[in-house]
Image (cartoon, rainbow, N blue to C red; front, side, top):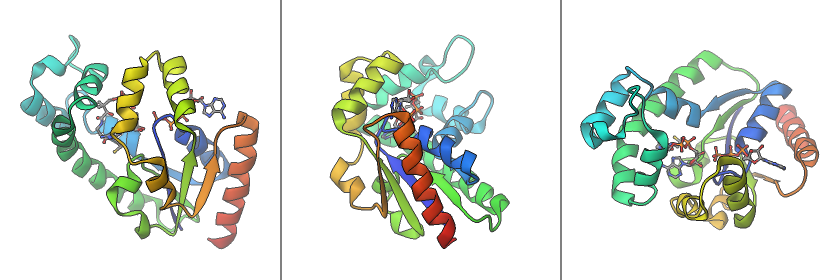
Length: 196
Ligand SMILES: CC(C)(COP(=O)(O)OP(=O)(O)OC[C@H]1O[C@@H](n2cnc3c(N)ncnc32)[C@H](O)[C@@H]1O)[C@@H](O)C(=O)NCCC(=O)NCCS
Ligand SMILES: Nc1ncnc2c1ncn2[C@@H]1O[C@H](COP(=O)(O)OP(=O)(O)OP(=O)(O)O)[C@@H](O)[C@H]1O
């Protein structure tokens, strides 16, 4: 069965997908693929440099992710230009990895922009990890050292909490402890695995 997993920035998606992987799911991580396709030396990074210039590279020749983040989360047109390069490359890799997963019982697609993509209904189930906006902001400021403005601008680039919840078949509220989160993930996984 193909399961979509999504949630706003810092909602806890990666934490949930790590638990699902431990429980036996195959996880395909769109954020990881979005990093892979613009790694040093890739055609993807060459396209980004062509579009945005060498100023967005570190002295070592890598994509300067904090600088790119400041640019694209403050400028929607720039974000669309970056997405037009990265998203098709990510999609190609997803298709390849899905082929490699074969007919594994539970294949989880961790896709931050699933609600925005309009493709949620192509999955057998959609898990939404839900955290209130203040919790998202706190996590970004505390764990990543971002300013409140950085955190707010990333939330503003994403679907609203309501629009995301509207595509959910399973909601995982992530407002309690990590232990509570793990217990809820186990519950959802057991239900999905029984259906697979
Ligand atoms: C702008 C970039 C370089 C910033 O890198 P950074 O290391 O700071 O963030 P990272 O990639 O780890 O993403 C963290 C989170 O930011 C949010 N986010 C990332 N890209 C986007 C986007 N285009 N729109 C809205 N939110 C986004 C997601 O919640 C994601 O989980 C990077 O996010 C990027 O290349 N984004 C474009 C590709 C994309 O859309 N990725 C999302 C999944 S395909
Ligand atoms: N229930 C929780 N209690 C305490 N800390 C948590 C909880 N859930 C997540 N965190 C922490 O919050 C941060 C964000 O979580 P995580 O990286 O899983 O979110 P994400 O949705 O994958 O983020 P991104 O959108 O940036 O990829 C991490 O440092 C994580 O350890």
